[in-house]
Image 1: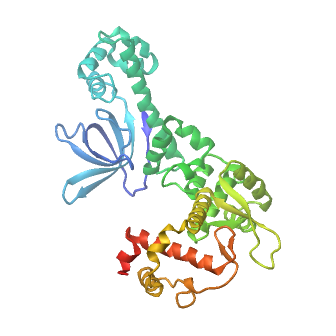
Image 2 (image 1 turned 180 degrees about the vertical axis):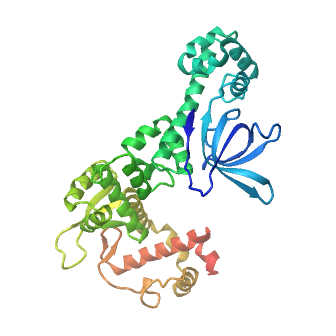
Image 3 (image 1 turned 90 degrees about the horizontal axis):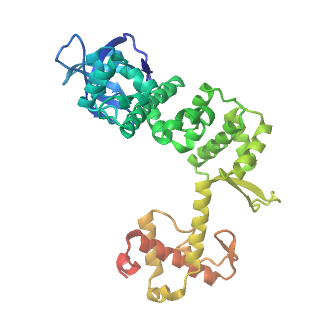
Length: 402
């Protein structure tokens, strides 16, 4: 018997149903949720409906299902399965049907008949332990025998992975995603590197990965846990609108979240920077009270986004003057008023101050200075023109009728 107890949910009245899977009506590959029709000894030719997580179950398999009976207002009586195990058939008829169901690539009904006729009830153990002997069956050569053995191992591997993931508290839907991402490597990765799940499997965050890590015995103060926790801390900061955290703030917050000694954070952060899991760079002091540069720590995507934005702004500022003559007659008060109405944003702290400010020096994008107010005005106009045109793919005179 191959157990596949997947994501059990406690119930007040559990029942056990033994049945043969006859037909799969619906299966969601992302969650594992399945609607199936099964046959039992009691129902005879009539089929029962089973719903629930049946990932890996194949037509023709004998299943031992654990769950509860319910009544659907439209479809009537059905069995809601919380878990199942595969029970290999013991009779000649059951084995013949099992092998001929199409579950194992390379075996159809006719070949199943021949295999059972040759080996009898030992056929399943032959496939498991001595697949090379299958060439004794008429019509089976080395290539087809290898396909059959590989398909058998694949089915067994899926079930073994699902059993393991269920044992460490992984839900059915997440187990499906883990298996799709890592296939046969799922067990080894979850055991040795569970925090990879947080960055590589959609739907799994740090907290879920942390729970799995505890279940497989990863130490509370493990460097891989601390590194994943640092990334999680930055992610939480991003949810609050921060593109980065100053290193002292990151260390302080990560210490609270991870509940580890502060001294352990620094070495793990250094490793994470070396592995390019985060980006650390010095920023110039922005406060008169701070005289030295501060190390800022970014998640990689946010660092790339900030640099890309800065480059884009510089490109607009350094663009040639070819576009400006077309806007020589623009009424900028009217244009800026239109833009303010469209965006709902007050563009400056004064009456359309983009064309009026005379402060020097002007600082734009990564500390680039423009000492003359005239050049700043021209740059701001280019930015505004770009915004107007980009908002609908039209020239500014088409949008505001100038």
